[in-house]
Length: 405
Image (cartoon, rainbow, N blue to C red; front, side, top):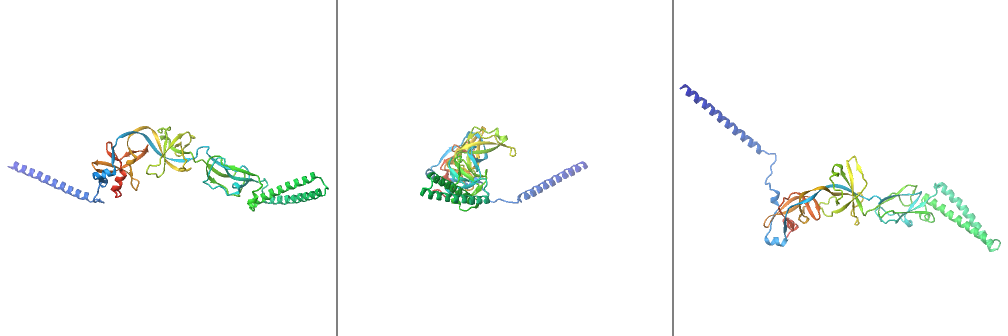
């Protein structure tokens, strides 16, 4: 009897403890659920992006828009690397012209100097350099003018006397001619020293250019005047830098490449060049690889590659930064779609339209890595065997945003 009572008490105790344990677990779970619902922020009416970009057309509308589709598939595409480059003039096609001797600078035919940015041809005169004597100080020039003036007056008197004597037949014609020759020499000397004086003190500049020895400086290359370092009428010493001319067609693209990536680049392949900010990937140009100087920069741990591109339309300028797409060794499988399938929003986002079922199209965001031969290479956003719109994407885009018919 006593043993049965003890057994009943033990069983009752275990039951009570188990009941209490269940209650405690239930309470903890309830508190945990309540705390989990107290989020710092809540998104109400959240909708997936794909659900906002679905267009359902009627059969007639699809026919009127001329929708054509194609199934995506992988293609073997060479690996590429996009880097920044700089437009430069080819070696030997840029020149800096300095004054070969002391003189005063004037434009051609006394005009103003050609402004920077002027297109010039090889051999075209750029400016005149009027030569000065070694003693070009102002005081010495004034003294020379006074001396030559006196010599001119004496020569004039001698010529006048010889003319009178010849008329009276009191002298020979030879002496008369000698007097006239002395007068011409004295007159030329006086005009020269007077012109140099005007060049030094800045008076009578136009008349000063007449009768002086001038050295014509010409452009050594076809190109554009990049810089002008002097002004018209300025006196310069020898070796003064006067102007710079650089060729603009063709131009080179200098591309610094990290030395760790240099061994991965196929240096025999052309590079694809486009302007910075060209988010639509249009107006891309091929630049052929050329042998340039083997230059490296230890600070940036890079070596330079060089490419040549035609610039007959003047689209690129010396010093301009551009985007360069280089071809790497090896290849990989990529999704390639026609360029006509790519749409751009106002923020530069890339989109394509997928045909999810009959007459139903969904807009999908994609990422374009490069454009090769009119086809866009996608890195993500589209999978293999999906049906995309290749013709009529722009019409679908207009239909979705209210611009279509």
